[in-house]
Length: 453
Ligand SMILES: *Cc1c(COP(=O)(O)O)cnc(C)c1O
Image 1 (cartoon, rainbow, N blue to C red):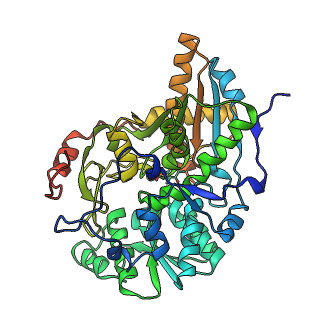
Image 2 (tube, rainbow, N blue to C red):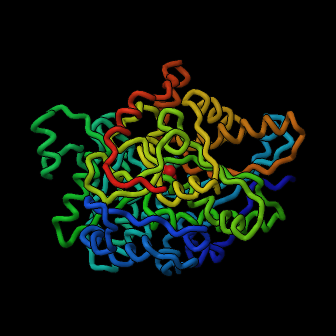
Image 3 (cartoon, rainbow, N blue to C red):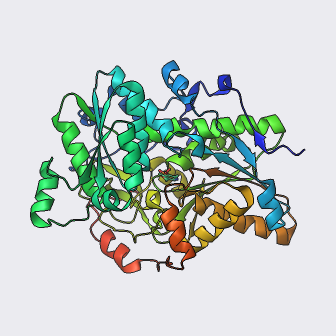
C-alpha cells in the first residue's frame, strides 16, 4: 500500500511558535498614529492583553506555547499531511502533490489555531468578554469555540447580509454559546450612526470591526480579537508549517513550492513562515500566496501606509493595499475579500522573498471540484485558490517532465459553503473583471503620510 496520510503524535505538537521577524533581512516598519508618528504598544492596551501586544512587536525567534493552549490543540492537532496520490493520477503529472489539512479543527478551518491562543491570553489577563467581527462566519465560529473552551463570553458582530444569508455558521456560534448580532446594530455609536443614515444597510466588515472595537475599548472587562492580519495572529498559525516540516522529514521529502490562499495572510504565514526560516538559512524553496483576481491586494495593490479597517479607526500599517474603502466584488471566498494584507507578508513580498499569484473565481471552483472528485475532501472556496495554482503548476510539470514537489495548505473544508458550489454547478457564478476603476478610486483616498522609499 502507498502511504497517503503522514501523521504525528500529539507529543509532537510544536512547543513554540516561530516568529519570522527574527529571520527577516529588515525589521518591520512600525504602525503609525493619525499624526504620522509611530504608535507605541500602549495604544493597543485598551483592546488587547499585554502578552499579545508583546508578541505583536517581538523579534524573538521562538515564543513558547502555553501548556493549556497545547492541550487545547490536541483536540485537532497535529493535523494530517496528505499525499494527493489520486489527484496526481487524475492530472497525469510527474509532480508529487501534498496538502496539510486544517479542516480537521472543530470549526473546520485553520482559524482556531489562533482563537484558542487569544482566548487563553485574555483569560489570563482577567478578561471575561471578547468582541469580534465576522463576515461569512469562519472567524466568529472559531472564537466562539475558543471562548467556550476558556470560559469567556463572546459577542460577534456579523455583517448583516451574511447574518441573513448564512444561517449555519451563526448556528455554530450559538451552539458554542456566543452571542451574535447583525451589524450594523443599535448597540454601538458606530452602528446607530449608520442605521440612522441607512436603516437598510447590509453592513460590511469595516463597520463590524468598528462596532467590535468601540465596545471593547469602552469596557474594562472586554477585549477585542482579530482573526488575521496582525503579527501575533500569523505567529500562532506557525504550528501548521512546523508540523508540516516534521511530516516531510518523516518521509524524506521536501517541497519545491509551498502555496496557500491569501486574504489577510494568516494561513499563508502559518504554513510558509517556518519554510522561510529554511530559505533564510540558504535552502531553496518557493513560497506562493494565492489571491482572487477580483481582490488582488499583493499583485495589484500599492505598498504604502493605510488603515486596517474601512473607516479609519486602526493605526496605519505599512502593507499592500487596494485602499481601505475598496469594496471587493461579492465573490464566494469571503475570507479573501480584505483590502489589505499582513504587514509581514507585505514586506516579504515587497523585498522579493515570496511570490504572489492572482486567480479568477470560476477557475478556482473548477479546481476545487476536480480536487473533491479526486481526493474526496470538499475544500473551502478560499482553499480553492491555492488548489488552482497547484494544479496549474502540476500540469506544467507534465509538459516539462519535472517531478516538482508541490505542497499547499488546505485551509478548511467547504461544508458550510455548499450554496456557492450549487451556484457554480448552476452556471450562476461569474468572473469579475479586475476592478481597476474602483481600486483607483479607493487608492485616491489613502491617508496622507509619507510613503516609504
Ligand atoms: C479565513 C480563511 C482564509 C483566509 O484568511 P487568511 O487570513 O489569509 O488566512 C482561508 N481559508 C479559510 C478556510 C478561511 O477560513
